[in-house]
Length: 312
Image 1 (cartoon, rainbow, N blue to C red):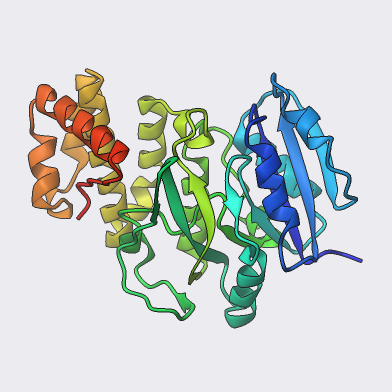
Image 2: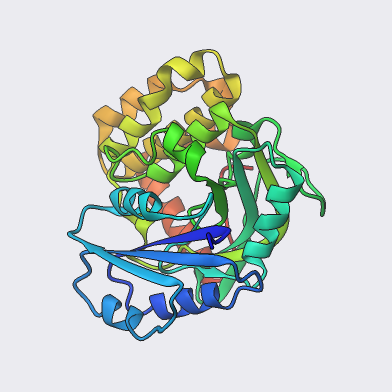
């Protein structure tokens, strides 16, 4: 019998976390799922940890290291279910995560992307709910002005969503040309074609503090390529232009701190300044020394369990 969900887990050198991640999946109150785990050429003991689990719902594949997008594409190709649920090998689901995703599907069957709310683990002592740029209460809803709603934290994450395998294939899957931001690229393509729905209940913990988490593997040139992949679409979509300009701002700050002044100047010219708030405009034009101090202060505040952001 075909399971309702196929849970896809890309794995690369997460021996300290994959056991807890798998336990959080097996502990789901909604039991109708299979797990497809793709070991992406791990060089530590990750695979040995996985092999300790004896459950016929778990299917393990191995490949040479090719990156998260290739691993996820391969896993989804092997999926037997109509709906694919994702989780990274260092994140955690609450026991009702799949049940709440199923509720979203039942409530909005016409939607293309289904997103549960989540919390962010900034360090071992500081966990904070994700912050979104739209109003919601306790009811599941279709997200209007999707791109505007995502300018602080992104509503979908690689461990909080489910979607139809058919829609995923129709969109072309993960773009393997992107070494980073391949997940955000996919969410943008979903949102441009389908409705996105949101469940306000927090059912997942995103461990942002882990040093070798997938989202940390980034280069500024590749991120610039990703941002400018939607030049045509943003001309006729002001919400998308706003979202991409916020990303250009963030990348420009990173480039200035890293002394990549040519890329910084290129990004600055491409930003419509009406899409930035006063704090962001000031930071964009601040000397590099001030930006480095601000970054140091932000890290210090995180250690003190305080989160400082320029996005609001």
